[in-house]
Length: 203
Image (cartoon, rainbow, N blue to C red; front, side, top):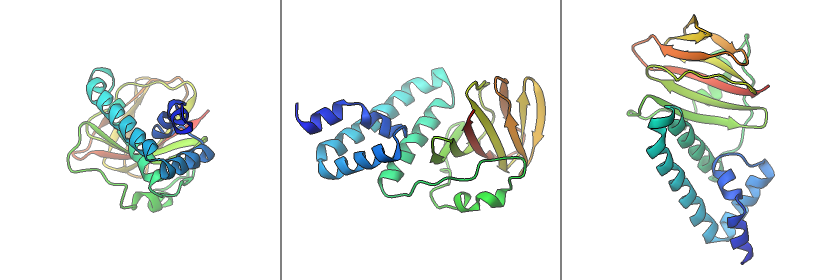
């Protein structure tokens, strides 16, 4: 098999599309894409396969699967098109919406007029944390995290975050950190979608 064929078969392209490659690996993929048209074709094919899989399986699995997969593909494409990787500050109890205006006001960070129950735009995917803007129309599925801290900063709208069944009313500017192993669900209480800055930080 040719060098480019071996490279395509190595699995690195799938990891790249999912945003799981290191900075060095990502640069290598982008270099290979610029040198070999076959790599670009394969990247597009992988992205389309993942989109098709999500469309067929996400409704039966979790409402978060498809939007997260689509957001990951969108992020990988933006990075491959030259968008620089960034490192937004980690959310904490002193965080303010104004701390993240650089990303919240970015022309790429908008939701379409029409989407299903949830829409996600990734801001950053680093070893330390995944940072995203999430629009929630009604509610999220119940979740529990064992290896990452989930943190919320409410940007627009309002919601109740239930942690082990206990509701916490949230409005713009409010911050919440979910304890490890705690069951939690978000239920929107506003007439508009609740727009949230979300981080998942390695424990």
